[in-house]
Length: 400
Image (cartoon, rainbow, N blue to C red; front, top):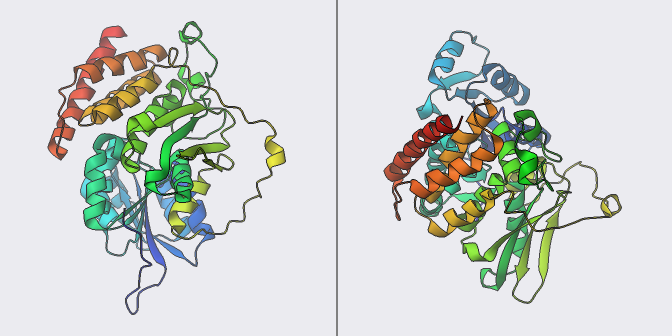
């Protein structure tokens, strides 16, 4: 990725960096708004985007002073257009409005916090427009890693990860050259069912799967953490973001969630990034890049974490992790099929229509059967995404 340059404001323009927050009502969006409030001298929120949560979006815009808001759902957006007054933020709605927010000329930084494959179009728009992208939407890289990386390179954009693990790798990799890296090690909390066996998980409820021990996240990501599918997707994300072969990526379970990831170099040195499990830290890192923004957060005290443990993942109980490595090795449309199948299966589980253990089984079946394309274009990826969602829904109905 090209190194960023400090933006130069045209005469008469606010010298602060303009920021678009996509997924502003989610957990990452909330963390970004917290940081933007603390950094008003450096950043100005320009546009906030959400899917359907008009009340929360309007409250967020008023909180940080954003002059524009976007609702991705056109029906909800049209209804909200009739409710806003002349003193409220300007409203746009629909998929085109989301893309326009990501590539707007008064936006320098895009915080991409949309969940799922729905965020891909906005990520590509921001990349082609040369933005600095604080990327929390891992699905953009899972589904279309080579396309997004190429769009960023050609557009002069900078991709900065906001996933805590990839932000940790990004920082640790600064300790050496790319040819000095032996392996990347992603840490996983193990989720709420660490130490359980398959027979213990036969009757897991959505409420139990959503009870994550260390992180507060959205429902889909939290369930993915419980199955280890989230770590499977992060393997694919790391493969494309850092241009590292899957064979040089490993996963280790670290239940305290203090060491966020590690990089081993060819001389045997290991560099790790540590910190409390707080999404504001990677958001702050991405927003400030290439500088570090001083924070008023409590200082890290190693004495508070006297015992940090690491253990191998239990891939027999949680086979989803292996699917991530498979998709990373195959490339092509494998990531798109894996992600679409998982999004659909998790939604069925949360609706009480699929058993917890059936999530990974159904996803594995769809991944194995999908019409694989080795070098897909965007149309191929869309087609596989739609196919996988339909096939997963049918498979869920067959086992429910």
